[in-house]
Figure 1 (cartoon, rainbow, N blue to C red):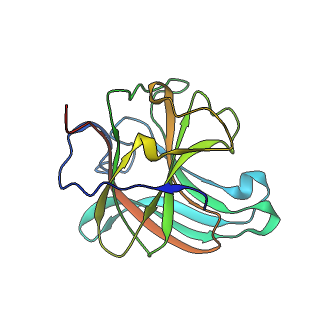
Figure 2 (tube, helix red, strand yellow):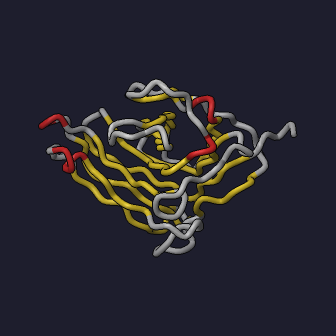
Length: 187
């Protein structure tokens, strides 16, 4: 996976906008719905699902399945629109994204899509390592690298966030229990 890993391990950061705490299985905290997407939309054969369940006492979104590189495939993803259909979210007041995550020991990525990501294969990615315990990672926007586009990340026009298993074949099990934008603790 050609992404950047950058995690701030601060004990607290100022949360400025909750994306989802997974307390409602029907809609995210921002009023939108998580969607499962896989490489089958492009002819791949990866399989999986994304659903809400309790993981170690926390309400969470679980992404599980199997990634296959056959037929030019290689991903499964849970994605959420950040604004109403066709609308962008301005996150310029935030420093990055905080995500509480647990998994199977593999690295996963958070993907961002913006007004600049016109093709389905374009995104801004930041890798997140997992283990069998819950950890909150603070991912600064500067750690999200462009994937198949040249423009720098414009946080004034965020469209979608995704949790993605990509590029590494095999079984997938990862869960997130809270996703939020955090502010600069020095301001």
